[in-house]
Length: 460
Ligand SMILES: NC(=O)c1ccc[n+]([C@@H]2O[C@H](COP(=O)([O-])OP(=O)(O)OC[C@H]3O[C@@H](n4cnc5c(N)ncnc54)[C@H](O)[C@@H]3O)[C@@H](O)[C@H]2O)c1
Image (cartoon, rainbow, N blue to C red; front, side):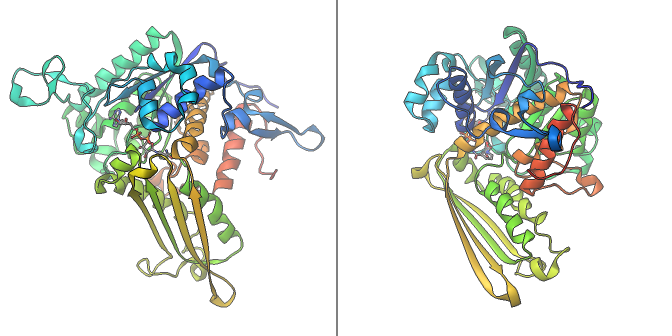
C-alpha cells in the first residue's frame, strides 16, 4: 500500500442539479430519506459495493468509504435550476415516481429546494414551456420574452455563463459549502453535432459564446463552462454533446476539474452492455438487435421530438459497436443488413403517457450458432426509470468529488460504468469501453489507486 494523497472530504458538499424533474427529485428525496434512516440507498455502488484490496492471505473486502475518503450523505446540500418554478416537493409529487409516504417525511427539506431560473433556449427543448428562465433586460418590448420584471430577452450564451457562475458562488456561500459538484439531470437537448471550428479549441468555444452562437453552443455547455470555471466537477447525465468536445476537455485540464458523461446507464442499455458480452464471449453470431421502449414521463415527452430523440438514439446505438465488433469478427458480426457491414441495430422510444416513469423495454435479439442456425432471445424489462437513475446520480456526484480531491482531472474514464456512451478522446481514435465488466474493473482499480492500493485485474 502506498501513501494515500486524497484530500479529506471535510465540510459540506453542495450538489447543484440542473433540472428538478423525475430523476433529480427521486435522487434528492432518496438521499434525504436515507440519511434519516427511513429508506435504503439500494443500487448505489458507493453505499453498498465492496472491493477486494490486497491478494492472497492479505485480501480484504472493503466498502468504498473504507478505502477512500468519500463525502457522507449527511454532508450533502442540494440546490437546482429548472425551467419550471415548482420546488422539489411539488416536482416530486408531480413526477409521481415515489409514493406520498416516501416523500412526506422530508417535505420540509424538499420545499426549501427551490429551482433557480434556468439558462434555457426553447429551441433546444421545444416541448417545454416553463417561465422560470434567465433573462436579460432590454429596452424594446419587441426584442423578446416577457419576463417577470419587465421586458427581457434570452441572455447571450456568455451572459448565461456569467449568471450561472454567480448562482454557483451564491449557493456555495449561502450554504457554507466547501465544495460543489454540478450534475445535469435536465432534459435531453436537440442533437448538436461536433463542429471542429467551434468545439475543438477552448478559445473558439469562448468566442462562439461571446458571439452568441446559438446553433453550436447549447445551454448545457454554459452550465458546464460555469461549473468548471467555478472549480466544480461537471457530470452530464443526458446524452447531450456538452462536455464531449475537446474545448471542454481543455477547460477541465486548465481548471483541474473532473468531467464525466454521457447519459445515465439505467435500463435497456444496462441490460445490453451486460448481455452483449454473453454473445461475444461464447463467439455466437448476431444478425440483429431491436430495442424498443414505451415511456410516459416528461423525459418521454421531450424525446418524442425527433431532434431530441436523435441525441438519445446516437447514445443508445453506440453501446453494442464496441462490444460486438464486425471488423474483429466479420463471420459473427459482419452480417445483417445495416449497410451490409454489420448486424442490424435499431433503438426506438415511444411516448406513451399511461406508463409515466414506469418504462417498459423490449429487446429482440437475433443470434446464430453452429453452422449459422438462427435463434432468438427476448428480454422484457419492466423498469422504473428514475429508480434506476437515482443511485447513479449519487455515485457519479460522490465519485467526481472524490476524483477532484485526488487531483484527477479531465475525462474520468472510470465512471464509464455508470454511463451509456462514455466519454473518450475520439480525436485520437480512442474507443469507449462499453463492456459492463471491463468498466467495473476500471471502476474498482480507480478506487484502489486512489486508496493507495495496487490495481489488479483478478476476477472476484
Ligand atoms: N431516468 C433514466 O433512466 C435516464 C437514463 C438516462 C438519461 N436520463 C436523462 O436524464 C434526464 C432527466 O430525466 P427526467 O426523467 O428527470 O426528465 P424530466 O423531464 O422529469 O426532468 C427534466 C427537467 O429538466 C428541466 N430542464 C430542461 N432544460 C433545462 C435547462 N436548460 N436548465 C434547467 N432545467 C432544465 C425540465 O424543465 C424538467 O423539469 C433526461 O435528459 C433523460 O434523458 C434519464
